[in-house]
Image 1 (cartoon, helix red, strand yellow):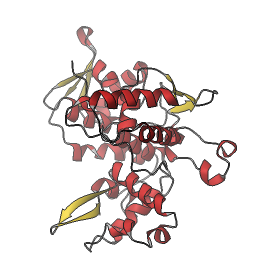
Image 2 (image 1 turned 135 degrees about the vertical axis):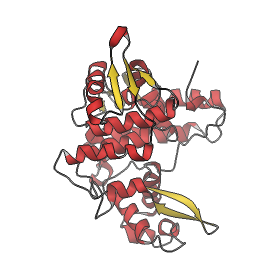
Image 3 (image 1 turned 90 degrees about the horizontal axis):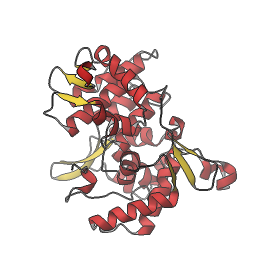
Image 4 (image 1 turned 180 degrees about the vertical axis):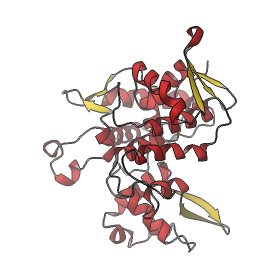
Length: 323
Protein backbone atom coordinates (compact mmCIF):
# COMPACT_ATOMS: atom_id res chain seq x y z
CA UNK A 1 0.00 0.00 0.00
CA UNK A 2 1.25 3.47 -0.89
CA UNK A 3 1.52 5.32 2.41
CA UNK A 4 2.88 8.60 1.14
CA UNK A 5 6.03 10.71 1.61
CA UNK A 6 5.84 11.04 5.40
CA UNK A 7 6.55 7.33 5.60
CA UNK A 8 9.55 7.32 3.25
CA UNK A 9 12.78 6.18 4.87
CA UNK A 10 14.64 9.29 3.74
CA UNK A 11 11.97 11.77 4.85
CA UNK A 12 13.28 14.61 7.04
CA UNK A 13 10.56 16.25 9.16
CA UNK A 14 10.31 19.99 9.70
CA UNK A 15 8.70 20.85 13.01
CA UNK A 16 10.25 24.22 13.82
CA UNK A 17 11.74 27.36 12.28
CA UNK A 18 8.79 29.69 12.82
CA UNK A 19 9.85 30.60 16.38
CA UNK A 20 6.19 29.90 17.36
CA UNK A 21 4.94 32.90 15.30
CA UNK A 22 2.35 32.17 12.59
CA UNK A 23 2.60 33.93 9.23
CA UNK A 24 1.61 37.60 9.52
CA UNK A 25 0.42 40.23 7.11
CA UNK A 26 3.24 41.99 5.28
CA UNK A 27 5.98 39.54 6.15
CA UNK A 28 6.29 37.87 2.76
CA UNK A 29 6.39 41.18 0.94
CA UNK A 30 9.03 42.56 3.34
CA UNK A 31 11.21 39.47 2.94
CA UNK A 32 10.80 39.43 -0.84
CA UNK A 33 11.65 43.13 -1.23
CA UNK A 34 14.70 42.93 1.03
CA UNK A 35 16.13 39.95 -0.86
CA UNK A 36 15.33 41.37 -4.28
CA UNK A 37 16.96 44.70 -3.44
CA UNK A 38 20.22 43.05 -2.36
CA UNK A 39 20.53 40.27 -4.95
CA UNK A 40 23.48 41.97 -6.62
CA UNK A 41 25.69 41.19 -3.63
CA UNK A 42 26.78 37.87 -2.17
CA UNK A 43 25.76 38.66 1.41
CA UNK A 44 22.00 38.30 1.09
CA UNK A 45 21.76 35.86 4.02
CA UNK A 46 23.01 38.61 6.33
CA UNK A 47 19.81 40.56 5.68
CA UNK A 48 18.07 38.31 8.18
CA UNK A 49 21.05 37.46 10.38
CA UNK A 50 22.73 40.84 10.99
CA UNK A 51 22.49 42.65 14.31
CA UNK A 52 20.37 45.42 12.77
CA UNK A 53 17.93 43.02 11.07
CA UNK A 54 15.21 43.77 13.61
CA UNK A 55 15.55 47.51 13.04
CA UNK A 56 15.52 47.00 9.26
CA UNK A 57 12.20 45.15 9.35
CA UNK A 58 10.68 46.87 12.36
CA UNK A 59 10.15 43.63 14.29
CA UNK A 60 11.94 41.59 16.96
CA UNK A 61 14.91 39.33 16.21
CA UNK A 62 12.89 36.12 16.64
CA UNK A 63 10.22 37.49 14.34
CA UNK A 64 12.86 38.15 11.68
CA UNK A 65 13.81 34.46 11.81
CA UNK A 66 10.14 33.55 11.60
CA UNK A 67 9.55 35.87 8.65
CA UNK A 68 12.47 34.29 6.78
CA UNK A 69 11.09 30.84 7.57
CA UNK A 70 7.66 31.63 6.14
CA UNK A 71 9.10 33.24 3.03
CA UNK A 72 11.22 30.12 2.47
CA UNK A 73 8.53 27.47 3.05
CA UNK A 74 6.06 29.31 0.79
CA UNK A 75 8.74 29.38 -1.96
CA UNK A 76 8.93 33.19 -2.07
CA UNK A 77 12.69 33.14 -1.41
CA UNK A 78 15.28 30.36 -1.39
CA UNK A 79 18.91 29.66 -0.57
CA UNK A 80 21.12 28.74 -3.47
CA UNK A 81 24.81 28.39 -4.27
CA UNK A 82 26.46 31.23 -6.15
CA UNK A 83 30.20 31.56 -6.73
CA UNK A 84 30.86 28.97 -4.07
CA UNK A 85 28.70 30.68 -1.43
CA UNK A 86 25.17 30.13 -0.14
CA UNK A 87 23.04 33.18 -0.89
CA UNK A 88 19.34 33.95 -0.61
CA UNK A 89 17.41 34.93 -3.73
CA UNK A 90 13.86 35.79 -4.72
CA UNK A 91 12.17 32.98 -6.64
CA UNK A 92 10.21 33.21 -9.86
CA UNK A 93 7.14 32.34 -7.81
CA UNK A 94 7.90 35.20 -5.41
CA UNK A 95 8.15 37.58 -8.37
CA UNK A 96 4.88 36.20 -9.72
CA UNK A 97 3.08 37.40 -6.60
CA UNK A 98 5.05 40.19 -4.97
CA UNK A 99 7.02 42.13 -7.58
CA UNK A 100 5.89 45.78 -7.50
CA UNK A 101 5.71 46.10 -11.28
CA UNK A 102 4.61 42.69 -12.52
CA UNK A 103 3.33 40.80 -9.47
CA UNK A 104 -0.25 39.61 -9.27
CA UNK A 105 -0.88 40.83 -5.72
CA UNK A 106 2.08 42.56 -4.01
CA UNK A 107 0.11 43.50 -0.89
CA UNK A 108 -1.99 40.34 -0.50
CA UNK A 109 -5.32 42.03 -1.09
CA UNK A 110 -6.87 39.15 -3.03
CA UNK A 111 -8.02 35.82 -1.51
CA UNK A 112 -6.52 34.07 -4.55
CA UNK A 113 -3.08 34.76 -3.05
CA UNK A 114 -4.10 33.14 0.23
CA UNK A 115 -5.22 29.95 -1.55
CA UNK A 116 -1.93 29.83 -3.46
CA UNK A 117 0.09 30.20 -0.24
CA UNK A 118 -2.04 27.62 1.57
CA UNK A 119 -1.38 25.16 -1.25
CA UNK A 120 2.35 25.83 -1.04
CA UNK A 121 2.33 25.12 2.71
CA UNK A 122 -0.03 22.16 2.93
CA UNK A 123 0.42 20.18 -0.29
CA UNK A 124 4.12 19.54 0.21
CA UNK A 125 5.45 17.15 2.87
CA UNK A 126 8.30 19.50 3.82
CA UNK A 127 5.98 21.29 6.30
CA UNK A 128 5.26 18.23 8.40
CA UNK A 129 2.40 19.29 10.67
CA UNK A 130 0.60 21.18 7.91
CA UNK A 131 0.88 18.28 5.47
CA UNK A 132 -0.07 15.63 8.02
CA UNK A 133 -3.05 17.54 9.42
CA UNK A 134 -4.67 18.24 6.05
CA UNK A 135 -3.69 15.03 4.28
CA UNK A 136 -3.60 12.25 6.87
CA UNK A 137 -5.65 13.24 9.91
CA UNK A 138 -8.75 11.05 9.63
CA UNK A 139 -11.42 13.04 11.49
CA UNK A 140 -13.33 16.28 10.96
CA UNK A 141 -13.15 17.34 14.61
CA UNK A 142 -9.93 17.45 16.56
CA UNK A 143 -8.39 18.66 19.76
CA UNK A 144 -4.99 20.26 19.96
CA UNK A 145 -3.70 17.34 22.04
CA UNK A 146 -5.02 14.85 19.47
CA UNK A 147 -2.83 16.40 16.78
CA UNK A 148 0.15 16.43 19.13
CA UNK A 149 -0.34 12.78 20.12
CA UNK A 150 -0.81 11.69 16.50
CA UNK A 151 2.40 13.38 15.41
CA UNK A 152 4.28 11.98 18.42
CA UNK A 153 3.22 8.46 17.44
CA UNK A 154 4.30 9.07 13.87
CA UNK A 155 7.66 10.47 15.01
CA UNK A 156 8.22 7.44 17.25
CA UNK A 157 7.24 4.98 14.52
CA UNK A 158 9.58 6.66 12.02
CA UNK A 159 12.41 7.23 14.56
CA UNK A 160 12.56 10.94 13.78
CA UNK A 161 15.32 12.64 15.73
CA UNK A 162 14.75 16.06 17.32
CA UNK A 163 10.99 15.49 17.34
CA UNK A 164 10.40 16.04 21.04
CA UNK A 165 6.91 16.47 22.42
CA UNK A 166 7.71 20.12 23.20
CA UNK A 167 8.78 20.79 19.62
CA UNK A 168 5.67 19.08 18.26
CA UNK A 169 3.39 20.88 20.70
CA UNK A 170 4.81 24.26 19.65
CA UNK A 171 4.41 23.38 15.98
CA UNK A 172 0.78 22.32 16.46
CA UNK A 173 0.06 25.53 18.37
CA UNK A 174 1.52 27.55 15.49
CA UNK A 175 -0.49 25.48 12.98
CA UNK A 176 -3.75 26.22 14.79
CA UNK A 177 -2.99 29.93 15.02
CA UNK A 178 -2.24 29.98 11.30
CA UNK A 179 -5.81 28.99 10.41
CA UNK A 180 -8.08 29.79 13.38
CA UNK A 181 -9.27 33.31 14.11
CA UNK A 182 -7.84 34.70 17.36
CA UNK A 183 -9.35 37.04 19.94
CA UNK A 184 -7.83 39.80 22.06
CA UNK A 185 -9.75 38.48 25.07
CA UNK A 186 -8.04 35.10 24.79
CA UNK A 187 -4.52 36.36 24.11
CA UNK A 188 -4.47 39.46 26.28
CA UNK A 189 -3.00 41.96 23.79
CA UNK A 190 -3.56 43.20 20.29
CA UNK A 191 -0.07 42.09 19.22
CA UNK A 192 -0.68 38.52 20.38
CA UNK A 193 -4.10 38.38 18.72
CA UNK A 194 -2.89 39.37 15.23
CA UNK A 195 -4.24 36.80 12.84
CA UNK A 196 -2.44 34.98 10.13
CA UNK A 197 -3.88 36.00 6.76
CA UNK A 198 -4.68 32.31 6.15
CA UNK A 199 -7.33 32.49 8.88
CA UNK A 200 -9.44 34.34 6.28
CA UNK A 201 -9.84 31.10 4.32
CA UNK A 202 -12.06 29.61 7.01
CA UNK A 203 -10.54 26.14 6.66
CA UNK A 204 -10.45 25.48 10.41
CA UNK A 205 -12.73 26.92 13.05
CA UNK A 206 -13.19 26.61 16.79
CA UNK A 207 -16.16 24.43 17.67
CA UNK A 208 -16.89 26.42 20.81
CA UNK A 209 -14.98 24.25 23.26
CA UNK A 210 -11.54 25.01 24.62
CA UNK A 211 -8.80 23.74 22.30
CA UNK A 212 -11.30 21.91 20.10
CA UNK A 213 -11.56 22.61 16.38
CA UNK A 214 -13.14 21.52 13.14
CA UNK A 215 -11.88 21.16 9.58
CA UNK A 216 -14.44 22.91 7.38
CA UNK A 217 -15.01 20.68 4.37
CA UNK A 218 -17.28 21.78 1.54
CA UNK A 219 -17.63 24.35 -1.21
CA UNK A 220 -14.91 27.02 -1.28
CA UNK A 221 -16.44 30.10 -2.89
CA UNK A 222 -13.23 32.15 -3.05
CA UNK A 223 -11.13 29.33 -4.54
CA UNK A 224 -10.88 30.16 -8.24
CA UNK A 225 -10.79 27.80 -11.20
CA UNK A 226 -7.28 28.92 -12.10
CA UNK A 227 -5.69 28.05 -8.75
CA UNK A 228 -7.59 24.76 -8.74
CA UNK A 229 -6.27 23.89 -12.21
CA UNK A 230 -2.71 24.78 -11.18
CA UNK A 231 -3.04 22.65 -8.04
CA UNK A 232 -4.27 19.69 -10.11
CA UNK A 233 -1.17 20.02 -12.30
CA UNK A 234 1.21 20.16 -9.35
CA UNK A 235 -0.47 17.20 -7.67
CA UNK A 236 -0.49 15.11 -10.84
CA UNK A 237 3.21 15.72 -11.48
CA UNK A 238 4.08 14.45 -7.99
CA UNK A 239 1.51 11.68 -7.65
CA UNK A 240 1.91 9.93 -10.99
CA UNK A 241 3.87 11.87 -13.59
CA UNK A 242 3.62 9.19 -16.30
CA UNK A 243 -0.10 8.49 -15.89
CA UNK A 244 -2.45 9.70 -18.60
CA UNK A 245 -5.51 9.60 -16.32
CA UNK A 246 -6.30 10.32 -12.67
CA UNK A 247 -9.35 8.98 -10.86
CA UNK A 248 -11.78 11.10 -8.88
CA UNK A 249 -10.75 9.11 -5.81
CA UNK A 250 -7.10 10.12 -6.22
CA UNK A 251 -7.97 13.78 -6.77
CA UNK A 252 -10.21 13.75 -3.71
CA UNK A 253 -8.41 11.63 -1.15
CA UNK A 254 -4.75 10.97 -1.98
CA UNK A 255 -2.21 12.77 0.25
CA UNK A 256 -1.32 16.11 -1.35
CA UNK A 257 -4.44 16.14 -3.54
CA UNK A 258 -6.64 19.20 -4.16
CA UNK A 259 -9.52 17.47 -2.39
CA UNK A 260 -7.48 16.99 0.77
CA UNK A 261 -5.59 20.28 0.83
CA UNK A 262 -8.57 22.49 -0.07
CA UNK A 263 -11.03 20.42 2.02
CA UNK A 264 -13.43 20.06 -0.89
CA UNK A 265 -16.48 17.81 -0.88
CA UNK A 266 -17.24 15.55 -3.84
CA UNK A 267 -19.96 17.79 -5.27
CA UNK A 268 -17.63 20.79 -5.39
CA UNK A 269 -14.80 18.67 -6.79
CA UNK A 270 -16.91 17.17 -9.58
CA UNK A 271 -18.32 20.59 -10.44
CA UNK A 272 -14.82 21.99 -10.79
CA UNK A 273 -13.59 19.02 -12.83
CA UNK A 274 -16.55 19.38 -15.19
CA UNK A 275 -15.31 22.89 -16.07
CA UNK A 276 -11.57 22.21 -16.08
CA UNK A 277 -11.33 21.59 -19.83
CA UNK A 278 -12.30 25.20 -20.48
CA UNK A 279 -10.00 26.56 -17.77
CA UNK A 280 -7.02 24.49 -18.96
CA UNK A 281 -7.71 25.24 -22.65
CA UNK A 282 -8.00 21.55 -23.40
CA UNK A 283 -5.08 20.28 -21.33
CA UNK A 284 -7.51 18.31 -19.16
CA UNK A 285 -10.76 16.51 -20.00
CA UNK A 286 -13.23 15.19 -17.47
CA UNK A 287 -15.11 11.98 -18.14
CA UNK A 288 -17.86 10.07 -16.33
CA UNK A 289 -18.47 7.40 -18.97
CA UNK A 290 -18.94 3.70 -18.28
CA UNK A 291 -19.13 4.33 -14.55
CA UNK A 292 -15.57 5.69 -14.45
CA UNK A 293 -15.02 9.19 -13.14
CA UNK A 294 -11.56 10.31 -14.22
CA UNK A 295 -9.50 13.17 -15.55
CA UNK A 296 -7.47 12.74 -18.75
CA UNK A 297 -4.57 14.89 -19.86
CA UNK A 298 -3.85 15.59 -23.51
CA UNK A 299 -0.16 16.61 -23.31
CA UNK A 300 2.86 16.57 -21.02
CA UNK A 301 2.71 18.34 -17.66
CA UNK A 302 4.77 21.51 -17.24
CA UNK A 303 4.80 22.99 -13.74
CA UNK A 304 6.34 26.31 -14.76
CA UNK A 305 3.81 26.86 -17.54
CA UNK A 306 1.00 25.78 -15.24
CA UNK A 307 1.52 28.92 -13.19
CA UNK A 308 -0.27 30.76 -15.97
CA UNK A 309 -3.49 29.22 -14.68
CA UNK A 310 -3.17 31.29 -11.49
CA UNK A 311 -3.32 34.45 -13.57
CA UNK A 312 -6.86 33.57 -14.65
CA UNK A 313 -8.29 34.23 -11.19
CA UNK A 314 -6.67 37.65 -10.89
CA UNK A 315 -7.71 38.65 -14.39
CA UNK A 316 -11.34 37.72 -13.68
CA UNK A 317 -11.29 40.14 -10.77
CA UNK A 318 -10.06 43.02 -12.89
CA UNK A 319 -6.37 42.66 -12.16
CA UNK A 320 -3.65 42.56 -14.77
CA UNK A 321 -0.01 41.53 -14.85
CA UNK A 322 2.88 41.76 -17.22
CA UNK A 323 4.05 38.26 -16.25
